[in-house]
Length: 448
Image (cartoon, rainbow, N blue to C red; front, side):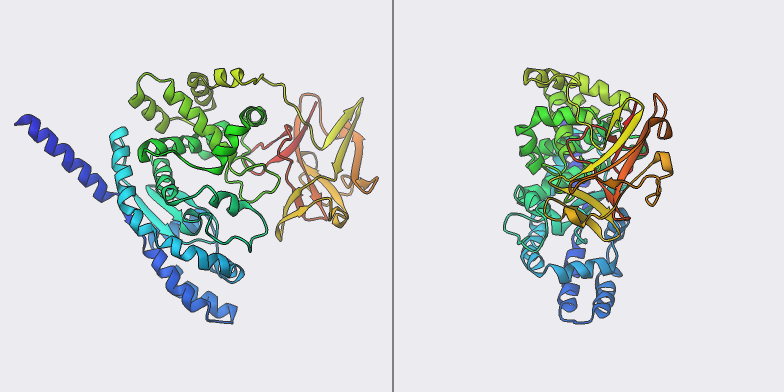
């Protein structure tokens, strides 16, 4: 009798957990009702007012949270609605699939509870954003941007000026939605200080959620970055290894549409792979899952111990990896007591300014009229005449200064190139002298 009561109690606890993991999809319905009204209007201001009234104002707490975590304005969403009609027409039937996947999501969370009994309750909100994110979280809320999360290779992305969504959608299907939700749900269990996280910690914090989602859904986690990393593992790790102690992550996580990158979000692949090796090499699987979910990824020492215990280094060395053999300096050269800043033509020079992302390449390099150096050594003054570079050829700008005017021995100074007085240039992907002192944008650095 006692055994029977325990079984009944277990079943009831599982059912209660499933029911308390509430899934909300009302924002999707509200968006499409508003969308149908908005596209009938020719006046942009009226479109904004209608969308605000019918969608934003009536949105769930999940939509409000999504807009806080991945900020966008009503005007931004209207602009995207007007700019990509083919995309919206093709993604619409995909967003209708969400409701049919709810039972599978619930089953995955129940199984996750079985794998990790300490799992805390949460809620899932499916929204429509402004192409800001496929998924994020706030507290115990999972927040899904359905216009990205539900994309697949059937969605028309021909109106976009880059291949970011095309690459993401090529590896997406209906199962991806379930896995993405479990990924974000696991994030609600993590309690981390983002300000203290190294690149290695951020990568494992994200990639480990991919791996645990794979266990919970009992299906392989499919993503473009996993496919790319499996084919370019050693060379990608060599570059990542030079940056893992720093805080800059803009070229590894949430990378968006940067055309300089060989693949988006490669940090996820690295974190996934490390976590998988840790799990596979652990004798106590339940404890391994607990350690992964509760990992102190904001503690770099904890991260390096986890990496060592995973056995991943042994795997890399078997594939030919050797510690610290990769170096690719960008942006300067040192000779005797002189420092020469160098800015030259590249296949893709990605920059960000008031007009968003702008890319300069071989075809339009001549549009670059001026280049300045801004950094720690001049208060990040993008207009400093002292740090204005000279064009010495059609392909190269240079600025030569005494090293003593820029930095002292043992110092590291971060800097960026500024194009035409307003566009801040992102470092090339394969550059090794890059990072960030505060976890913000990825900068170059010079050191002696």
